[in-house]
Image 1 (cartoon, one colour):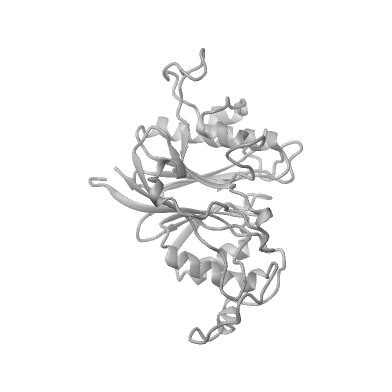
Image 2 (cartoon, rainbow, N blue to C red):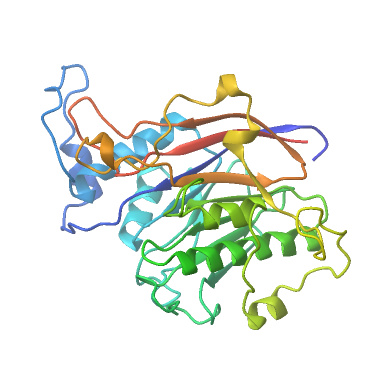
Length: 326
């Protein structure tokens, strides 16, 4: 790119369609209330079906004007509904985690058609057999994957959703995502690489391993040999001052930490649950960028998922980050 470019990145766990029904998008749109009449305040509580939530999700996305976005927990119906509701403004890539086609949850990447034309994409499972669709890490609650997208502009994105049950899986998953980011930089030196996702764990405390691995605060466990053969790394990084005897390699930086403090929004929690219970809240959804530069963070904001009538579009909040690619 010949000049700095401002982009907005995002990550949002949609909450999968746990209450499926046959209501169409057209029927959901037809059921919307008159926007000129005040709605009843906070009358809706608890989780609502996707057929009720999907329009609120699309409205939030339209208002946020995200250019490149990673979703988590999206079933194929949810992916197609959003593609339709967003009016063709976005294209997407991704596969279902159960079969590598359409079955199971996706971690898709949506991208604005007027900003990007996607060139390449790949998917890998966060397990000991990373190219076997549906493969499960021992002790994990379900199969987990990551989706990488590389537009023909100077940027790359890896989107993922780590496990809720196994910290060992989360740490291996973080190590594999970080390895994939390093491979991208080895292939295209200087390219800004970003990671979005639901880590199902925090940046501090006893469950911080995945976050610490991504940001260089903890040694990464070894990734599968099959994975390193598929994504080979350059062989000559510098010595690592943090871990004597090891080589210094690329790590990520949390964009909340990188952005000016005045432009980091006041909402901290990215997971809220559906019960309006502050005790459930946690910050487990993140946007990272390669620590050694190529970009500048201008702001990071956690958007509300709550409407005046009490409906929550998801049990997670959309996280957006404004960056300048230099």
